[in-house]
Image (cartoon, rainbow, N blue to C red; front, side, top):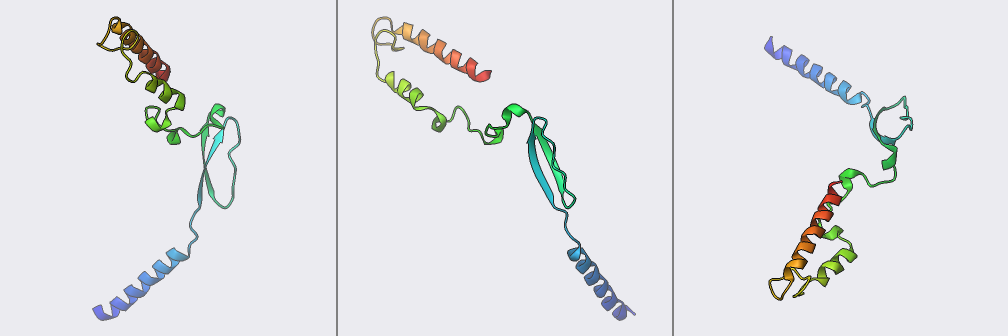
Length: 121
C-alpha cells in the first residue's frame, strides 16, 4: 500500500510545483513623485508611490548626499583657508608663542561655533 502511495504523492508535488512556476509573477514598481504630481496608474503592475516635497524635486536625494564633515566634500576655498593658518605664530595665531596669541584662539573658537551653528540649521 505504501509503495503505491509514493508515486501518487510525487506526481502531486510535481504538478503543484509546475503550476506555481507557470503562474505570472506580480511586478512591483517603486516611484518617487514630487509636490502634487499624480501617481501613475498601471493595469499590469503594482505601482508604489513615495511622495516628497516639491522643493526637493531637483536635489540629490538625502540618502545619497555626502557627509558635510567628510574631508573629500570640503571646498578648495576652505582647504586654502585652513592652510593659511598652518605655522602662524604671534597675534591672531592661536599659538602659545608670541604676545597676543590668545586673540587668535578666541577668533578661532568663534569661527568654529558659527560654522557649527550654520550646519545645525
